Length: 463
Image (cartoon, rainbow, N blue to C red; front, top):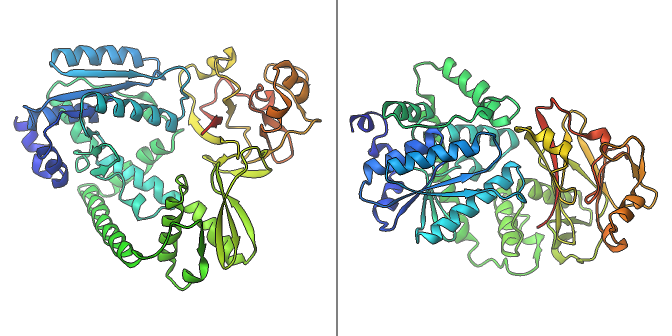
Protein backbone atom coordinates (compact mmCIF):
# COMPACT_ATOMS: atom_id res chain seq x y z
CA UNK A 1 0.00 0.00 0.00
CA UNK A 2 1.10 3.55 -0.74
CA UNK A 3 0.49 4.62 2.87
CA UNK A 4 3.22 2.27 4.12
CA UNK A 5 5.71 3.66 1.61
CA UNK A 6 5.09 7.17 2.96
CA UNK A 7 4.89 6.50 6.70
CA UNK A 8 6.11 3.07 7.91
CA UNK A 9 8.78 2.21 5.37
CA UNK A 10 10.52 -1.09 5.99
CA UNK A 11 13.94 0.46 5.34
CA UNK A 12 13.34 2.88 8.25
CA UNK A 13 13.03 -0.03 10.68
CA UNK A 14 16.11 -1.07 12.62
CA UNK A 15 18.01 -3.49 10.31
CA UNK A 16 18.62 -5.90 13.20
CA UNK A 17 14.84 -6.29 13.64
CA UNK A 18 14.22 -7.18 10.01
CA UNK A 19 17.21 -9.53 10.05
CA UNK A 20 15.72 -11.45 12.99
CA UNK A 21 12.31 -11.72 11.31
CA UNK A 22 13.71 -12.75 7.91
CA UNK A 23 15.99 -15.39 9.41
CA UNK A 24 13.24 -16.87 11.59
CA UNK A 25 10.80 -19.42 10.20
CA UNK A 26 8.30 -19.70 13.06
CA UNK A 27 5.12 -17.69 13.72
CA UNK A 28 5.35 -14.01 14.68
CA UNK A 29 3.64 -13.29 18.00
CA UNK A 30 2.46 -9.68 18.34
CA UNK A 31 1.55 -8.17 21.72
CA UNK A 32 -1.61 -6.11 21.16
CA UNK A 33 -3.25 -3.85 23.75
CA UNK A 34 -5.73 -2.51 21.21
CA UNK A 35 -4.12 0.95 21.16
CA UNK A 36 -3.00 2.65 17.93
CA UNK A 37 0.63 1.59 18.35
CA UNK A 38 0.00 -2.15 18.66
CA UNK A 39 -2.78 -2.13 16.03
CA UNK A 40 -0.39 -0.39 13.63
CA UNK A 41 2.21 -3.05 14.44
CA UNK A 42 -0.21 -5.82 13.46
CA UNK A 43 -0.85 -3.99 10.16
CA UNK A 44 2.90 -3.56 9.65
CA UNK A 45 3.52 -7.31 10.13
CA UNK A 46 0.70 -8.32 7.78
CA UNK A 47 1.82 -5.87 5.09
CA UNK A 48 5.53 -6.67 5.02
CA UNK A 49 5.33 -10.36 5.99
CA UNK A 50 1.96 -11.47 4.55
CA UNK A 51 2.85 -15.15 4.32
CA UNK A 52 4.06 -15.51 7.89
CA UNK A 53 1.69 -16.83 10.61
CA UNK A 54 0.72 -13.87 12.82
CA UNK A 55 -0.50 -14.61 16.36
CA UNK A 56 -2.07 -11.62 18.14
CA UNK A 57 -1.71 -11.71 21.95
CA UNK A 58 -4.07 -9.57 24.04
CA UNK A 59 -4.02 -9.43 27.84
CA UNK A 60 -7.13 -8.09 29.56
CA UNK A 61 -5.96 -6.48 32.81
CA UNK A 62 -9.59 -6.13 33.98
CA UNK A 63 -8.70 -2.82 35.61
CA UNK A 64 -10.69 -0.30 33.55
CA UNK A 65 -14.48 -0.49 33.23
CA UNK A 66 -14.24 -0.78 29.43
CA UNK A 67 -11.66 -3.61 29.40
CA UNK A 68 -14.18 -6.37 28.64
CA UNK A 69 -15.90 -4.30 25.95
CA UNK A 70 -12.54 -3.63 24.28
CA UNK A 71 -11.75 -7.35 24.38
CA UNK A 72 -15.00 -8.20 22.58
CA UNK A 73 -14.41 -5.54 19.91
CA UNK A 74 -10.87 -6.83 19.38
CA UNK A 75 -12.17 -10.40 19.00
CA UNK A 76 -14.66 -9.23 16.37
CA UNK A 77 -11.97 -7.35 14.45
CA UNK A 78 -9.52 -10.28 14.59
CA UNK A 79 -12.23 -12.65 13.31
CA UNK A 80 -13.03 -10.31 10.40
CA UNK A 81 -9.33 -10.06 9.56
CA UNK A 82 -8.84 -13.86 9.78
CA UNK A 83 -6.27 -13.41 12.55
CA UNK A 84 -5.49 -15.82 15.36
CA UNK A 85 -6.16 -14.01 18.63
CA UNK A 86 -5.12 -15.32 22.05
CA UNK A 87 -6.58 -13.56 25.11
CA UNK A 88 -5.39 -13.75 28.71
CA UNK A 89 -7.13 -12.40 31.81
CA UNK A 90 -5.90 -11.08 35.14
CA UNK A 91 -7.03 -13.30 37.99
CA UNK A 92 -8.42 -11.78 41.19
CA UNK A 93 -5.36 -12.72 43.25
CA UNK A 94 -3.06 -10.58 41.05
CA UNK A 95 -2.53 -6.98 42.18
CA UNK A 96 -3.07 -3.89 40.06
CA UNK A 97 0.19 -2.05 40.51
CA UNK A 98 2.10 -1.32 37.30
CA UNK A 99 4.85 -3.84 38.06
CA UNK A 100 2.39 -6.62 38.96
CA UNK A 101 0.33 -6.06 35.82
CA UNK A 102 3.48 -6.07 33.66
CA UNK A 103 4.66 -9.31 35.28
CA UNK A 104 1.29 -11.01 34.73
CA UNK A 105 1.14 -9.77 31.14
CA UNK A 106 4.56 -11.14 30.26
CA UNK A 107 3.79 -14.44 31.95
CA UNK A 108 0.86 -14.78 29.55
CA UNK A 109 3.02 -13.79 26.57
CA UNK A 110 5.66 -16.38 27.48
CA UNK A 111 2.99 -19.05 27.88
CA UNK A 112 1.61 -18.28 24.41
CA UNK A 113 5.08 -18.23 22.85
CA UNK A 114 5.66 -21.72 24.22
CA UNK A 115 2.22 -22.91 23.07
CA UNK A 116 2.73 -21.68 19.50
CA UNK A 117 6.38 -22.78 19.43
CA UNK A 118 7.59 -19.25 18.76
CA UNK A 119 10.65 -17.41 20.05
CA UNK A 120 9.87 -13.92 18.67
CA UNK A 121 7.66 -11.45 20.52
CA UNK A 122 6.93 -8.19 18.68
CA UNK A 123 6.09 -5.14 20.79
CA UNK A 124 4.53 -1.86 19.69
CA UNK A 125 6.83 0.54 21.54
CA UNK A 126 7.40 3.64 19.42
CA UNK A 127 9.67 6.66 19.30
CA UNK A 128 7.64 8.66 21.85
CA UNK A 129 7.78 5.75 24.32
CA UNK A 130 11.56 5.73 24.12
CA UNK A 131 11.81 9.49 24.65
CA UNK A 132 9.45 9.37 27.66
CA UNK A 133 11.32 6.45 29.22
CA UNK A 134 14.72 8.13 28.88
CA UNK A 135 13.35 11.43 30.26
CA UNK A 136 11.95 9.67 33.33
CA UNK A 137 15.18 7.77 33.91
CA UNK A 138 17.27 10.92 33.58
CA UNK A 139 15.30 12.41 36.46
CA UNK A 140 16.06 9.40 38.66
CA UNK A 141 19.68 9.01 37.59
CA UNK A 142 20.56 6.21 35.25
CA UNK A 143 23.43 4.34 33.58
CA UNK A 144 24.15 3.89 29.88
CA UNK A 145 21.91 0.80 29.91
CA UNK A 146 19.00 2.95 31.03
CA UNK A 147 19.62 5.64 28.43
CA UNK A 148 19.49 3.23 25.50
CA UNK A 149 16.39 1.33 26.61
CA UNK A 150 14.09 0.12 25.29
CA UNK A 151 16.23 -1.39 22.55
CA UNK A 152 15.02 -2.60 19.17
CA UNK A 153 16.28 -6.13 19.89
CA UNK A 154 16.34 -7.52 23.43
CA UNK A 155 17.43 -11.12 23.90
CA UNK A 156 15.74 -12.94 26.77
CA UNK A 157 16.56 -16.45 28.00
CA UNK A 158 13.90 -18.27 25.97
CA UNK A 159 12.81 -15.71 23.39
CA UNK A 160 13.66 -12.38 21.74
CA UNK A 161 11.76 -9.10 22.07
CA UNK A 162 11.57 -7.09 18.85
CA UNK A 163 10.43 -3.45 18.66
CA UNK A 164 10.02 -2.61 14.96
CA UNK A 165 8.39 0.81 15.51
CA UNK A 166 11.01 2.58 17.62
CA UNK A 167 11.94 4.88 14.73
CA UNK A 168 8.36 6.11 14.23
CA UNK A 169 6.49 8.72 16.32
CA UNK A 170 3.08 7.86 17.77
CA UNK A 171 1.24 10.35 15.57
CA UNK A 172 2.43 8.46 12.48
CA UNK A 173 0.89 5.26 13.87
CA UNK A 174 -2.39 7.02 14.67
CA UNK A 175 -2.53 8.49 11.16
CA UNK A 176 -1.90 5.03 9.66
CA UNK A 177 -4.77 3.47 11.64
CA UNK A 178 -7.13 6.27 10.58
CA UNK A 179 -6.10 6.01 6.91
CA UNK A 180 -6.65 2.23 6.85
CA UNK A 181 -9.81 2.38 9.02
CA UNK A 182 -8.18 0.20 11.66
CA UNK A 183 -10.11 0.47 14.95
CA UNK A 184 -8.15 1.28 18.09
CA UNK A 185 -8.83 2.12 21.71
CA UNK A 186 -7.77 5.19 23.65
CA UNK A 187 -6.94 4.73 27.33
CA UNK A 188 -8.36 7.83 29.06
CA UNK A 189 -5.99 7.34 32.00
CA UNK A 190 -3.15 8.35 29.65
CA UNK A 191 -4.51 11.90 29.84
CA UNK A 192 -4.50 12.10 33.64
CA UNK A 193 -1.69 14.23 35.09
CA UNK A 194 -1.33 12.06 38.21
CA UNK A 195 1.09 9.70 36.43
CA UNK A 196 4.73 10.79 35.95
CA UNK A 197 4.87 9.41 32.40
CA UNK A 198 1.72 11.33 31.49
CA UNK A 199 3.17 14.57 32.87
CA UNK A 200 6.37 14.01 30.88
CA UNK A 201 4.28 13.43 27.74
CA UNK A 202 1.95 16.41 28.24
CA UNK A 203 4.33 18.99 29.65
CA UNK A 204 7.81 18.16 28.36
CA UNK A 205 7.30 16.48 24.98
CA UNK A 206 4.55 18.87 23.90
CA UNK A 207 6.71 21.81 24.98
CA UNK A 208 9.65 20.48 22.96
CA UNK A 209 7.40 20.09 19.91
CA UNK A 210 6.33 23.73 20.17
CA UNK A 211 9.82 25.03 20.96
CA UNK A 212 11.44 23.18 18.05
CA UNK A 213 8.56 23.44 15.60
CA UNK A 214 9.66 22.23 12.18
CA UNK A 215 12.76 20.52 13.60
CA UNK A 216 12.82 16.73 13.91
CA UNK A 217 14.37 16.72 17.39
CA UNK A 218 13.16 13.15 17.94
CA UNK A 219 15.47 11.98 15.16
CA UNK A 220 18.45 13.57 16.94
CA UNK A 221 17.30 12.01 20.23
CA UNK A 222 17.14 8.60 18.58
CA UNK A 223 20.60 9.06 17.06
CA UNK A 224 21.99 9.90 20.52
CA UNK A 225 20.49 6.70 21.98
CA UNK A 226 22.01 4.68 19.12
CA UNK A 227 25.47 6.20 19.66
CA UNK A 228 25.25 5.58 23.42
CA UNK A 229 24.26 1.98 22.68
CA UNK A 230 27.34 1.53 20.52
CA UNK A 231 29.54 2.99 23.25
CA UNK A 232 27.92 0.77 25.86
CA UNK A 233 28.52 -2.35 23.73
CA UNK A 234 32.18 -1.36 23.27
CA UNK A 235 32.66 -0.77 27.02
CA UNK A 236 31.02 -4.08 27.87
CA UNK A 237 33.30 -5.96 25.47
CA UNK A 238 36.37 -4.12 26.76
CA UNK A 239 35.55 -4.84 30.41
CA UNK A 240 34.79 -8.50 29.73
CA UNK A 241 38.21 -8.89 28.14
CA UNK A 242 40.02 -6.93 30.86
CA UNK A 243 38.49 -8.91 33.72
CA UNK A 244 38.30 -12.27 31.95
CA UNK A 245 40.69 -13.83 34.49
CA UNK A 246 39.21 -12.07 37.52
CA UNK A 247 37.47 -14.41 39.97
CA UNK A 248 33.87 -13.41 40.83
CA UNK A 249 32.86 -16.86 42.05
CA UNK A 250 33.91 -16.51 45.71
CA UNK A 251 31.55 -15.11 48.41
CA UNK A 252 34.17 -12.51 49.31
CA UNK A 253 36.08 -9.95 47.28
CA UNK A 254 39.18 -7.96 48.20
CA UNK A 255 38.72 -4.22 47.92
CA UNK A 256 42.48 -3.68 47.68
CA UNK A 257 42.40 -5.20 44.19
CA UNK A 258 39.66 -2.79 43.09
CA UNK A 259 40.40 0.56 44.70
CA UNK A 260 43.10 1.49 42.17
CA UNK A 261 40.61 1.06 39.30
CA UNK A 262 38.40 3.79 37.85
CA UNK A 263 35.00 4.22 39.47
CA UNK A 264 33.33 2.81 36.34
CA UNK A 265 35.45 -0.35 36.55
CA UNK A 266 34.78 -0.65 40.28
CA UNK A 267 31.03 -0.50 39.60
CA UNK A 268 31.36 -3.11 36.87
CA UNK A 269 33.29 -5.51 39.11
CA UNK A 270 30.93 -5.14 42.07
CA UNK A 271 27.88 -5.53 39.85
CA UNK A 272 29.36 -8.60 38.15
CA UNK A 273 30.29 -10.15 41.49
CA UNK A 274 26.83 -9.60 43.00
CA UNK A 275 25.11 -11.00 39.90
CA UNK A 276 27.27 -14.13 39.87
CA UNK A 277 26.56 -14.58 43.59
CA UNK A 278 22.82 -14.63 42.84
CA UNK A 279 21.88 -11.07 43.83
CA UNK A 280 19.54 -9.88 41.09
CA UNK A 281 17.29 -7.02 42.12
CA UNK A 282 19.73 -4.23 42.81
CA UNK A 283 20.52 -0.99 41.06
CA UNK A 284 22.74 2.04 41.32
CA UNK A 285 21.22 2.95 44.69
CA UNK A 286 22.57 -0.29 46.15
CA UNK A 287 26.00 0.24 44.63
CA UNK A 288 26.07 3.84 45.87
CA UNK A 289 25.27 2.65 49.39
CA UNK A 290 28.15 0.18 49.23
CA UNK A 291 30.58 2.84 47.96
CA UNK A 292 29.43 5.28 50.66
CA UNK A 293 30.02 2.72 53.43
CA UNK A 294 33.43 1.80 52.00
CA UNK A 295 34.41 5.49 51.89
CA UNK A 296 33.34 5.99 55.52
CA UNK A 297 35.83 3.30 56.60
CA UNK A 298 33.31 1.83 59.07
CA UNK A 299 32.66 -1.88 59.36
CA UNK A 300 28.98 -2.43 58.60
CA UNK A 301 26.43 -4.92 57.25
CA UNK A 302 23.88 -4.17 54.52
CA UNK A 303 20.79 -6.25 53.66
CA UNK A 304 20.80 -6.96 49.90
CA UNK A 305 17.76 -9.22 49.53
CA UNK A 306 15.77 -11.82 51.46
CA UNK A 307 18.66 -14.31 51.50
CA UNK A 308 21.94 -12.41 51.80
CA UNK A 309 23.67 -9.53 53.56
CA UNK A 310 26.90 -7.79 52.64
CA UNK A 311 29.47 -7.32 55.39
CA UNK A 312 32.07 -4.61 54.82
CA UNK A 313 35.16 -5.38 56.85
CA UNK A 314 37.96 -3.80 54.87
CA UNK A 315 39.94 -4.84 52.98
CA UNK A 316 37.30 -7.52 52.29
CA UNK A 317 33.61 -7.54 51.37
CA UNK A 318 31.74 -10.68 52.46
CA UNK A 319 28.36 -12.10 51.48
CA UNK A 320 26.49 -13.89 54.27
CA UNK A 321 23.36 -16.04 54.23
CA UNK A 322 20.48 -14.70 56.33
CA UNK A 323 18.77 -16.72 59.02
CA UNK A 324 15.29 -17.49 57.69
CA UNK A 325 13.80 -17.29 61.19
CA UNK A 326 15.00 -13.76 61.89
CA UNK A 327 12.36 -11.16 62.72
CA UNK A 328 12.01 -7.89 60.79
CA UNK A 329 14.35 -5.11 61.83
CA UNK A 330 13.82 -1.37 62.26
CA UNK A 331 14.56 0.60 59.10
CA UNK A 332 13.55 3.69 57.14
CA UNK A 333 11.80 3.56 53.78
CA UNK A 334 11.95 6.78 51.77
CA UNK A 335 10.69 7.34 48.22
CA UNK A 336 7.73 6.53 46.02
CA UNK A 337 8.89 3.05 45.05
CA UNK A 338 10.75 1.78 48.09
CA UNK A 339 11.24 -1.92 48.68
CA UNK A 340 12.78 -4.05 51.42
CA UNK A 341 13.23 -7.82 51.71
CA UNK A 342 12.96 -9.66 55.03
CA UNK A 343 14.91 -12.76 56.09
CA UNK A 344 11.77 -14.96 56.06
CA UNK A 345 11.41 -14.42 52.31
CA UNK A 346 8.74 -11.70 52.44
CA UNK A 347 9.07 -8.39 50.64
CA UNK A 348 7.49 -5.03 51.48
CA UNK A 349 6.93 -2.54 48.66
CA UNK A 350 5.61 1.01 48.55
CA UNK A 351 4.12 1.98 45.20
CA UNK A 352 2.29 5.15 44.19
CA UNK A 353 -0.39 4.53 41.54
CA UNK A 354 -3.35 6.46 40.04
CA UNK A 355 -6.76 5.69 41.52
CA UNK A 356 -8.45 3.58 38.88
CA UNK A 357 -12.15 3.07 38.24
CA UNK A 358 -14.16 2.20 41.38
CA UNK A 359 -11.04 1.58 43.47
CA UNK A 360 -12.48 3.53 46.39
CA UNK A 361 -15.69 1.47 46.31
CA UNK A 362 -13.66 -1.76 46.22
CA UNK A 363 -11.68 -0.63 49.26
CA UNK A 364 -14.87 0.27 51.15
CA UNK A 365 -16.31 -3.15 50.37
CA UNK A 366 -13.12 -4.78 51.65
CA UNK A 367 -12.33 -6.63 48.42
CA UNK A 368 -8.57 -6.51 49.00
CA UNK A 369 -6.98 -9.02 51.35
CA UNK A 370 -5.26 -7.31 54.28
CA UNK A 371 -2.74 -10.16 54.41
CA UNK A 372 -1.18 -8.81 51.22
CA UNK A 373 -2.30 -5.24 50.53
CA UNK A 374 -3.11 -1.95 52.17
CA UNK A 375 -4.36 0.90 49.98
CA UNK A 376 -3.86 4.31 51.59
CA UNK A 377 -4.36 7.95 50.65
CA UNK A 378 -1.40 9.75 49.10
CA UNK A 379 -2.29 13.09 50.72
CA UNK A 380 -1.74 11.81 54.27
CA UNK A 381 0.90 9.17 53.56
CA UNK A 382 4.22 10.11 55.22
CA UNK A 383 7.31 10.79 53.15
CA UNK A 384 9.36 8.69 55.58
CA UNK A 385 8.09 5.31 56.79
CA UNK A 386 9.45 3.34 59.75
CA UNK A 387 9.30 -0.46 59.61
CA UNK A 388 9.87 -2.27 62.90
CA UNK A 389 9.00 -5.32 64.98
CA UNK A 390 5.62 -5.75 66.67
CA UNK A 391 5.54 -4.70 70.32
CA UNK A 392 2.94 -6.03 72.82
CA UNK A 393 1.72 -2.49 73.66
CA UNK A 394 1.00 -1.46 70.07
CA UNK A 395 -2.41 0.00 69.28
CA UNK A 396 -4.13 1.97 66.49
CA UNK A 397 -7.58 2.69 65.01
CA UNK A 398 -8.46 0.16 62.27
CA UNK A 399 -10.32 1.35 59.17
CA UNK A 400 -14.07 2.00 59.68
CA UNK A 401 -13.59 1.82 63.47
CA UNK A 402 -14.35 4.68 65.89
CA UNK A 403 -12.04 3.53 68.69
CA UNK A 404 -8.43 2.39 68.93
CA UNK A 405 -7.70 -1.33 69.20
CA UNK A 406 -4.83 -3.23 70.76
CA UNK A 407 -2.80 -4.98 68.06
CA UNK A 408 -2.50 -8.08 70.26
CA UNK A 409 -6.29 -8.31 70.50
CA UNK A 410 -6.61 -7.99 66.73
CA UNK A 411 -4.02 -10.75 66.29
CA UNK A 412 -5.99 -12.96 68.67
CA UNK A 413 -9.29 -12.28 66.88
CA UNK A 414 -7.73 -13.39 63.60
CA UNK A 415 -6.01 -16.38 65.23
CA UNK A 416 -2.54 -15.20 64.22
CA UNK A 417 0.04 -17.22 66.14
CA UNK A 418 2.75 -15.77 68.37
CA UNK A 419 5.41 -17.05 65.99
CA UNK A 420 3.75 -15.39 63.00
CA UNK A 421 3.09 -12.05 64.68
CA UNK A 422 6.73 -11.83 65.74
CA UNK A 423 7.86 -11.92 62.10
CA UNK A 424 5.30 -9.44 60.75
CA UNK A 425 6.48 -5.88 60.17
CA UNK A 426 4.71 -2.93 61.72
CA UNK A 427 4.60 0.06 59.36
CA UNK A 428 4.53 3.46 61.10
CA UNK A 429 5.05 7.13 60.36
CA UNK A 430 8.02 8.98 61.85
CA UNK A 431 6.19 9.73 65.12
CA UNK A 432 5.13 6.11 65.60
CA UNK A 433 1.51 6.12 64.35
CA UNK A 434 0.73 2.72 62.83
CA UNK A 435 -0.33 2.74 59.18
CA UNK A 436 -0.71 -1.00 58.74
CA UNK A 437 0.28 -4.42 60.04
CA UNK A 438 0.03 -7.20 57.38
CA UNK A 439 -2.92 -9.42 58.23
CA UNK A 440 -4.80 -6.59 59.96
CA UNK A 441 -6.94 -3.75 58.56
CA UNK A 442 -5.08 -0.54 57.67
CA UNK A 443 -5.42 2.56 59.80
CA UNK A 444 -8.53 4.75 59.62
CA UNK A 445 -6.27 7.81 59.83
CA UNK A 446 -4.56 6.98 56.52
CA UNK A 447 -7.48 5.46 54.58
CA UNK A 448 -8.18 6.20 50.93
CA UNK A 449 -10.51 9.14 50.36
CA UNK A 450 -13.32 9.13 47.81
CA UNK A 451 -11.96 11.88 45.56
CA UNK A 452 -8.28 10.91 45.69
CA UNK A 453 -6.48 10.91 42.33
CA UNK A 454 -3.49 8.97 43.63
CA UNK A 455 -3.17 6.19 46.17
CA UNK A 456 -0.36 4.32 47.88
CA UNK A 457 -0.13 0.54 47.74
CA UNK A 458 1.66 -1.22 50.60
CA UNK A 459 2.39 -4.74 49.33
CA UNK A 460 3.63 -7.50 51.63
CA UNK A 461 4.20 -10.76 49.74
CA UNK A 462 6.43 -13.78 49.63
CA UNK A 463 9.16 -13.27 47.04
